[in-house]
Amino acid sequence: MERDNSRRWIILSYFANIDGKAASQHLDDRFDHLKELGIEPVLLSSICGRRRPDISHTTVPSVAPSGVRFELRYLRRRNRFLKAALLPVYIAVLPFYFLEKIIINIDSQWSWFPSGFLSGLRICRKFRPEMIYSTGGPVSAHTAAALLAHFAGLPWIAEIQDPLVYDAFPRSRIALKINAIIERMILRRASAVVFLAEGAREKALCGTGIKHEKARVIYPGAAAPNLPSAARSKGEFCRFAHFGSLGGPRNVGTFLDALDRVFASNPELSEKIRLDLYGTMDAVSRKQIEQFKYPEVITDFGKVPRQEALEAMQKSDVLLLIQQLDDLSFYTIPSKIYEYFQVSRPVFGMVYRNKGLRELLLKYGHFAAESDSVDETAERISEIVKKWQSDGLEPEHEWPVSLFTVREAVENLVALSDEVLESKSKLG
Image (cartoon, rainbow, N blue to C red; front, side, top):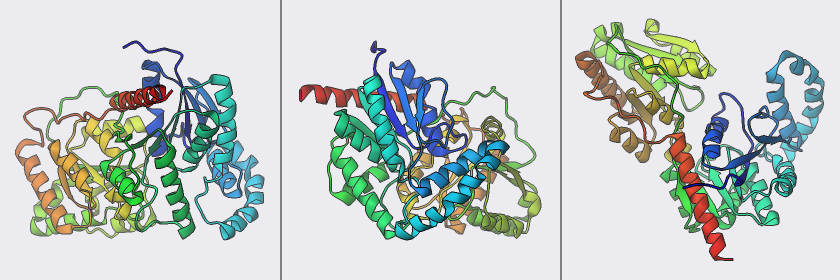
């Protein structure tokens, strides 16, 4: 179907064009596909990321001290000159930041919404978009989009990447109340609401009691990696590889305890199993690794560029996915899984009370265990290694590549926008 090339969306996302930031990468991978489908994206984001040269991209700052401080930290990371030049400003903001936190302790990005709304009005007058699309982690983008939809009279699709309200909410009670208000506002006012997992959709609808006929689940998928086809052969070791950050409730403690148990039962396997870590880790995770009785088993590669990480994924025997041990994991699917699927290697998912994620892994022939169960994790490691010893973990056919690609996600999003526009047209 031919699309009108004049179609424009104004896209509001606090994070954009930031390498290594999941909330940014989720959106950044979509722009080329949107353009191919006839949508001209007009992006509005914070100053944390650099402006994109390939699309119309406006960056605006937050207005409260917490937001200014947060954004200055991103700016200072870009180069040494900015780090030195902005230091006096950073220091000057600190007293006001502490005062703000005493008065209202909510997320540091909350005050981006006034800037986003006012800039959005100017952009709407200039580009006359057909649709507002808000996405990303901080709720300030959705707040700005709600105001913009009201004053500009445009339909609005809100994409909620993580649940806004859940048990064991990590911030203050007032932050939880504000998120609950914003969640209800989104479900009442947005023309369509997109969730990234069925658990998140059910949580929002059941928790608020609001029915929304266009509350949909669109799995974000991952971009197909640009990797050369490589013939595989069984190596000397069965290599488990974890990619991404380790910290707080997401750590390798259970996996290492399970490995210890496997080695106690089968000492010879300590000469066959290896764990490769790619990414950052906190002091707790580092201490867990330092205390592990078999240090020769673990190699810490640290943070590596994305392309290098993808190549390492392709060469690994098993890709390790670890969900954090908190209530948020009940309702989310880690975006890393879609990237794992794309490299066509077996995945061992350590899931936390997440039926949907477990079913997704098993459906595609992968492996799963509860991330807080040493017994089940040890059983699964033994099962995987046994299979590696027998056939090198190579199935009769290629490990199935996920159907959840970025292209498919964008097609579903555009189809949803068509439904929204058609409904609006019928209402006159």
